[in-house]
Image (tube, rainbow, N blue to C red):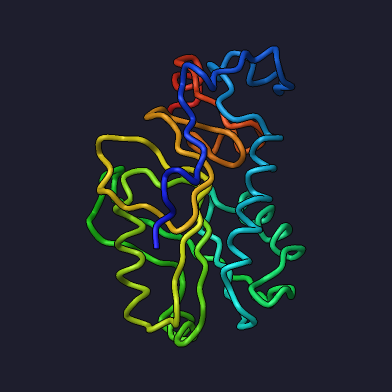
Length: 220
């Protein structure tokens, strides 16, 4: 069941717009980001809470926690570390196995309407009867995730839930809402905490709005 919006943090641009000199920013990005939307400490606190919520909704059955690469890997790593310490419905630690998937839904920068999954058919068949938790960095329009879930359902997992650190507030959204959400962010191009712009900014701890200088400098 999608998480109720009242349970996530709504990042409003004019309220969550910290100056760069308020926090530590790598010098090589001093002109490339416009503002800090979510400081790293707030990200980590929110992930700790999400881990607690997620783990408490499972019983003693093993969960396959699957990272959607590339952008999701930092969120995935931190979330799993917190989930290791959290307790399930029975007040016990949660058995987990970890997996990774790369998903593409575009050709020449345009949506193809199809989802290409890096897992082989044999690997997908192994998900049958298992509890699957997909960990994603950001839900933009939601179309890619919807297509992925449609594809996975054909392999009959016991359950599939999605945890996304961010959901973008965009008029292009198809309306899809994940089961677990960290923050809702403005309709801006955000970078940092492994969210990238042409593979740049993955080494930035905070989630920031990219500047026009950054867009121009790292355009391909």
